[in-house]
Length: 165
Image (cartoon, rainbow, N blue to C red; front, side, top):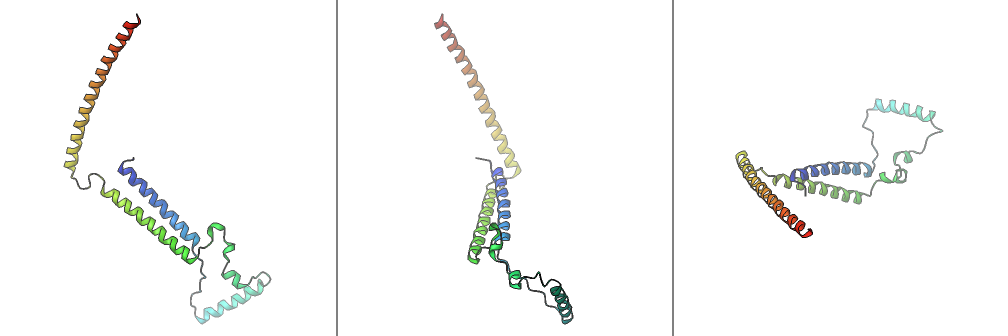
């Protein structure tokens, strides 16, 4: 198991990935809506109508019906970009939001269990000194055990050598 700081970093990486995946899903699977033109004054409306009539006459052979231009069918989208039904989209939004909340709660928990959050610097230094002393003891015991092992190994080698002669 990784230490808590590594776990915390992994959680932040996963949260960033979840943010990206959520935004990507929402941007690809939302239902398209038609934009309404902003309200305009009569002078702008007349100017736009004259331009529209001129453009319509110039491109009359290439026009498609406006209903097809305004609302593209879902079959015109690539399969990964087809809009979801409103209920599916809403449930996916809730699930994505719950996943993000769960990950942030996990991050908050890891932050609260980090060592030293509630301890002062003096307490932390005293704990380090105590652990250092225990480590030195353990290393001394290990060294003594290794020396004892070497003695026993030499005795066993001597006995085996005596038996071979």
